[in-house]
Length: 430
Image (tube, rainbow, N blue to C red):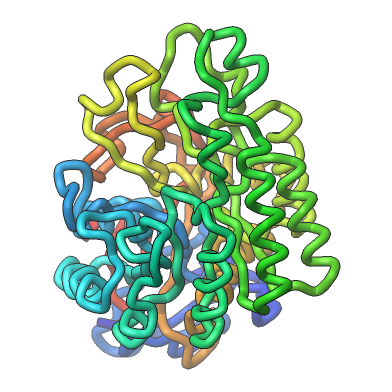
């Protein structure tokens, strides 16, 4: 099937493109980019006037819970949520059951993603066997089967010696280590940021130091081993400063931020105890939130991720102390970025494309996707004026635990093309 996108505002900083044009998709590739293109026989013409066309969005930090926790999400339902949110690629974290720590588990995810046929699923393998932090996982085996990166996400690797071994080994395969930075002896029992919120609400605090110390440690291990290091879901101003200094020294260090850490803070947690605001790491201070905002705008933060963490109702509709950590985010990430940063003019479309499409592919060593002839037709078409309310019905994934439930947002993806196939059409998943 061929498609001609007529009159889209195409934005791709990789090829210095920021203009209204036509884009022809044929045989899974971008066949032509220009003005006044004529559709070949049998081509479907899509009126894209007033919409923005960008390289397909990438979320390099999601949890699809499959295998082992399919009651929360499956690869198929997670792919549906990703497609609805405008993503062509997602990287799945390995804290499944069994843990994704062998080539067989990588193959399982890739096979199920192909069956779903909605978006590219890029499995991330575990660093240590069972994510227990005791011995190396089958890293070489997983690389051969298609693992795009390695992480023990959900846990920090507690032993510095073990983390060094992991990084030395991963560095042989041109892959990045995505580090969940948490010193668990400092965060034990913590369920909320340690500070005003924990004092006000009378709950065990989770100190920022528990994250920052491990960021420092892992940066120093990056210096020692030369292994590319990516800091997952950074949440504090001091942690970001550590990353800035590492970058200034030329170390191969990158980092990511979530929309919930960009647009929420501990003051949003009220005596209503909305457990959809219980995160790992927790929502931090307004000052931390402001620092992250500055970092995403000035280039210090490399990409936006959702840390999409689906949970069943009974795992959230309970006391704060025992509720599970996390929020779903695939279907609200782009709309939040548009509503809070792009539409008000605080972030350019070019920068949006960098943090949600270009940089994640570079970090994961994926082939670049460009709006130019010959590139893979993995593209996202966006209506910046579409208005909607975040409701359970809006969310097509299996779980509905959104921290942004009830928010009114402006801007969303209307169409997604994956290898030239239209997997999202006028806002409806194929």
